Length: 90
Image 1 (cartoon, helix red, strand yellow):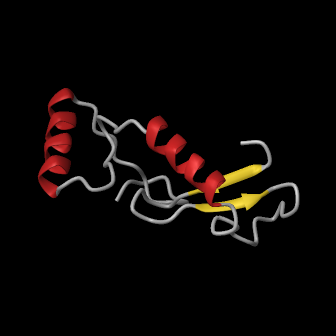
Image 2: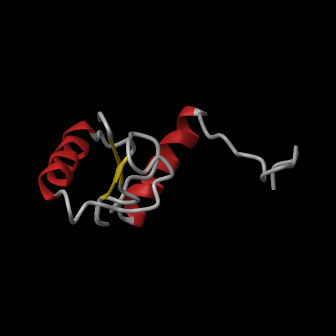
Image 3: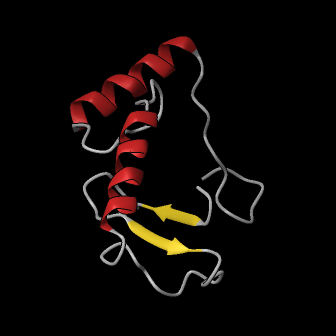
């Protein structure tokens, strides 16, 4: 968002905020220096997030993850990804 870049690794982790005009390499987190902007970004991220029907969402229990796996297996939509840099699934 116009010169700001916000990053949050997980919804329970703090937001990192960078000023792209003055720090294009994102070396200095300015979230503590810009609390209003950081809070605006957190609100935006919270409003924009939609839990996935298929992928694991932060905070989901193993029971929910297993239910998603079973549903995918029943629907025949399971995708076994290959290991990185290989052609063979493992």
